[in-house]
Image (cartoon, rainbow, N blue to C red; front, top):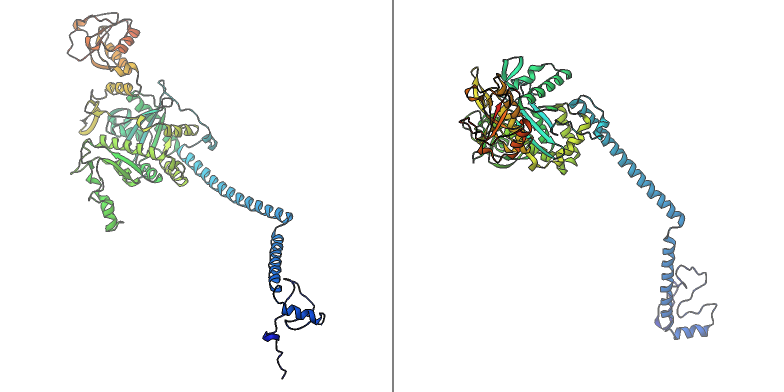
Amino acid sequence: MKSRKQSMDGFVTGRPQRASLGEISSKKTTTIGRVSDTQDKPRALSNIQGNVQRPASTANKLKQNISESLAAIDESAKPSHRQERKQKRKKKLIVRVILAIIGIIIAIVAGWLLLKIWQTMHSVFGNGNIFDLFSQQKLKEDSYGRSNVLILGTTDDDPDHPGATLTDSMMVLSVNQTKKDAYMFSIPRDLYVKFGMACNSGYAGKINEYFGCVNNGNSPEAETERMDKTKKFIGDIFGMDIQYVAHINTAVIRDAVNAVGGVTVNVQSRDPRGILDPSMDWMCRARELNAQQRRARCPTGHYMQLTNGSHEMDGEKAMWFSRARGLVAPTYGLEQSNFDREKNQQLVLMALKSKATSTGTLTNFGKVTSLMDAMGKNLRTNIDTKEIRTIMNLASEIKESDIHRLSFVESDNTLMTTGTAGGASIVQPAAGLYDYSDIRAYIKSEIYSTPLSKEKATVAVLNGSGISGAAQKEADRLSELGLKVVHVGNAPGNEKSTKTRVYQLPAGKEKSATKSKFEEMYGSVSSDSPKYNLSVDAQFIVVVGSGS
């Protein structure tokens, strides 16, 4: 066994060291205390004895070599110009692929939306080019610059509903495209009218029968005939030139409200408790509901029980609210039955208009397409496709404060009342059966507001011509202008006159616009006290002459 070499001065023989990091030396290294073959012994010994400076210089050199090596690594890690160009081309390719994918998605969505629009157009309008939607054609107007729309609501979407073709909901909407205002009023379904033809009820009956009486066919031509004749018929009754008609199924309220995510309806009742209609409590007992769902639907035990104020409604609630009319006891807040129902329908439509034209709805793709579906399934109209954008713009521009709701049954303006005909309950003008003069004058004074109509002057018309019916004919003419005719009769003593004379009574001294209109029509207005003593509240007396 070899003896282990002992180190000098008790040191263990050191490991060989290279001169620099990464350098492989082929030279034979020597350990401390041992002299290399290539070195002389005296120098080796002196190095050993003076073993002080060499370790420090070696450490400094090692640090320098490490720094140089790291710098070399960093330098080698930098991409070349060729690599940079390659990376840029790769990034551009990725961007192009992403943009192409986005473009494909947009094209698919746009194509699907155009298909939905085309389907809706075909269903609602019956004709029209899809490119017409990019046009903006002004709406047709009457001689006063207003566009009038008749809205007819039926339940023919529900074949099990009795009288599904009756127009139980009727409303007129009048819009001024320049002033950006709107007026609306409902037509009582039980208004008793003369049909001018034989219907199920004969030659006279409730107005809701007329639409189905015109033509009961299912063809598009039959629908067009019904709409055209009905808007003319109702326009004549109310003294309006109606340009448009929209026939909707009442389910459109449910579907449209659901499409926009619900609406906020401000319930307004004369009763401080709000409204209650127990006739709808069957909704609380629906078989498909469990006990928890029934409690959620009818927390008070009644389905249609609402306090006055704002209420969030889904489509089902809004639809039944617009139908409520308090048919059974106990009920409250619906004392005027159909008249109250008509007011509530207007409230729902205003709430739907507000929600449908809000930014959140118009920018929600799902809501827009759902709304289109609701319209396509439940709406027919004679509106031209080129006029749709105009209508949409008007809907968003007209403020709620500029939408005025008219009523014919207010306590201070009772123009319609109830009665009976043939044993059935009906609605008729307060002025008398088939006498729509006061109603027409009121509409003109509100919708077609002029200085003359705003004065609402009262007029008595007397026949001094000796011609039968001359006074009534002139009274109808004055009513058309918006004047309120309070009396029609013969001049006392069968007085005959060739010229029509007008007297302004003291009560009418502030009615300057009315006086000016009479001067324009008849040449002059006398302020002298007339010799006629009439027990009527008249501000002007018009005595019709034979030369009128």
